[in-house]
Amino acid sequence: GLFIDRNDNLYAIDSESSKERHPDWTTGVRIGTTKEDRVVAFIPPHKTDTPWGAMGEGVAVDPDGNVYGAEGPISRPTAGGGLTKFAKK
Image (cartoon, rainbow, N blue to C red; front, side, top):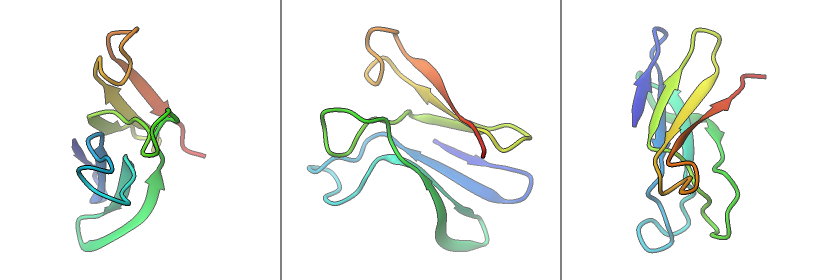
């Protein structure tokens, strides 16, 4: 999923990377700008028993800068999906 805020900040969430699909690539939220091809911040995935972790498939950001990851049932099978808030520090 992608989200672009009113300041042209781009948030791209990656739930599909793995050693088979993208070697040496970690799932997570990459943050940049629509004006430049550069990642300026990264939110790491949830810790799991895999080296690349687990992350949601949809992303949104509220006016305070908190990032939300929407997770399907594969990320949280016992909960049937969920929403994770990554609070801005």
